[in-house]
Amino acid sequence: MPPLSTDRRYQGRRISVDLDTIQYPDGSSGVLEIVRHPGAAAVVPFLDEVTAPDPRILLIRQYRHAADGYLWEIPAGTLEPDEIPADCAERELLEEAGVEAEDFWLLTSLLTTPGFTDEIIHLYIATGLTEVAAAPEPDEYLEVHEIRWSQVGRMIREGQIRDAKTLVALMYVQCFLRGTAATGAP
Image (cartoon, rainbow, N blue to C red; front, side):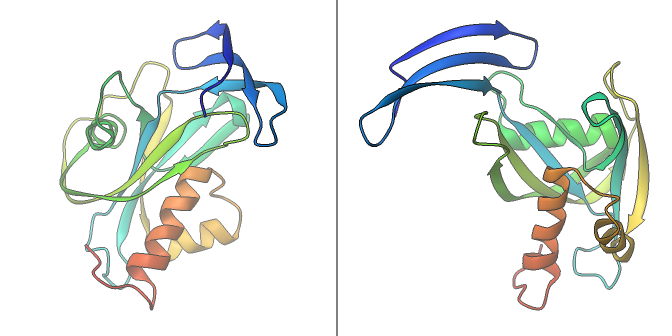
């Protein structure tokens, strides 16, 4: 349901903040702070077949000010105006990991924090990788690492991978493409 009114309080490079007056399902109204975000795409890059016994993937170790340090992540980025999510995933894979992919599949799309933002991240898997020159943004401080799938599981269990989009994407792959119930893996 659209808001009764919107008051834009901040407009930044990547986000804006609105005060929306809304009508709740019971007919009452209230004011909510909403962070508007254009959306994003992220990709799990597989160097080997997804169903190989212990395939290799690429993970990014990236500095994040909001996390007060480095995080393990899959390549990801914000959608440009009118950009298709798959194109964003391809662009970010090239810019951050320095690879191009022969094949992309959509895993799922998720609402990051629906209590205060409208951001949606589209999660992909990429295979058939070819190395090219990386071109990270000037404000991106990152390293690309080749990681075995067995190590990914240990990193998750030990709390080394804490980024939500990365956790969802990796767990999705494990549950639906690599797990015992997996069928039709790419």
